[in-house]
Length: 52
Image (cartoon, rainbow, N blue to C red; front, side, top):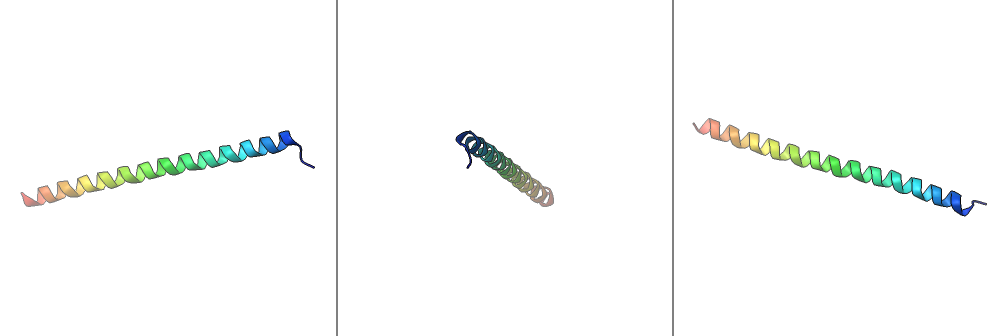
């Protein structure tokens, strides 16, 4: 039989793991969006340079 403090500790540990995974996902999405913006700006500069 598992006691209440053990269950609480397991729940806390699982919560921390899930929050960490979520934080990594949010950071990854932020990096992806930043890279997309950079690529769009580079493409715009290429078009401007080729039009000259």
